[in-house]
Length: 465
Image 1 (tube, rainbow, N blue to C red):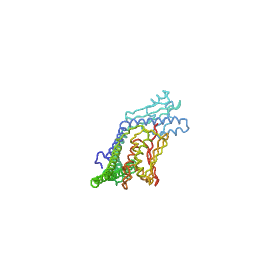
Image 2 (image 1 turned 90 degrees about the vertical axis):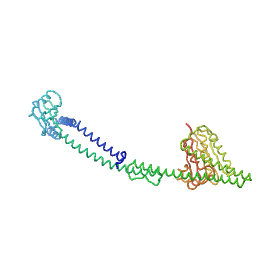
Image 3 (image 1 turned 180 degrees about the vertical axis):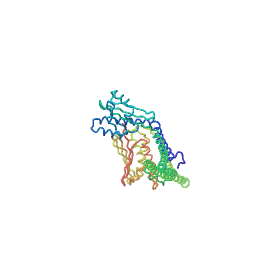
Image 4 (image 1 turned 45 degrees about the horizontal axis):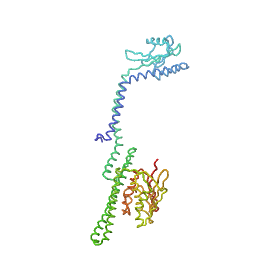
């Protein structure tokens, strides 16, 4: 358990022992340096407290009874004398060190009575036994004086006893610290070790693990949840990677196969037919363009996701840009009967953004609508601007998107996950490029969709303040 010097078990044990040593050392230092003075100060405070109570009780009928109880509770001697040093009252408690009239103590009583002070403190030392007696003198009235005294017993015996107790406490504390550290470290370290071992499996590509555990420690539970989330996301990423490779391979293979086929056909079957060769060359050029578009889209995504792309902000007319993009689809209107409806509530809308990238966003969203619109082949583009924002919508009339699929449609090739399909236009990477461009601009974007009602892809450009 303690093999590794920097292991969690070792660190917990080390700090528990350090804490125990610090506490024990503090107790030893306190006993050696401050215990005697603390004990003496406490005795002085007790005597002063009793004297204060005596002053409070002096006019009460059961005065003698009350101060006698007080003397017993505090282990002090209380004596009340008159001006002639005759004792009017003496408490029944008479402990070691108490002063009596049989001793030669009249000198401090005489001193106090002649001092005209209301209270005064004296410390008397017996040189024979090194015992100190604390006396607190209090003037009750002109005829009565109270003397409260208590001995400060030499504490060498007490010190020896406490030293032995501290020695035993030191051994027990260190043993307890070791045992407590063992159980705490086991309680904390075991789930962390388990999580660490599972994380190593995750690093090797094993996504069938679960980081849940039975511990009640909030931080470890949070870590487990985070790692489970990470595992799920890595699993999705790995799946997307495999899908991407399969789909890209498919998109590369299809035009390459067609290029090769039509090149061979042109050379072998249409060698003497210039018209057929021209048709073959047109198909070869078209498929080459598709390959170029696919490679460019992959490179665009790679640059954006590596945070290497920057924005070239310029002012331009968004309405004019959209009209120019729609001109590229004239062929689809003539040959495929597509209908492109462009609605805008303003004839000129100047925005500040990256013209090329915003154009790519609109182009990709229109391509996506072309691929998924309904049998009416209708694609609608709406641009509505007000004082706060500009809303751009590209709407198709297709089957819509399942609600559970919406968070993932912006991922590469996600729409072709179940069955890869050759798009009429585009490469299948369009929405992922749209996502990266809009996030680079910090524009809000999303999709509204209903089953068999089509999809509405939108993004919002805020007005500059």
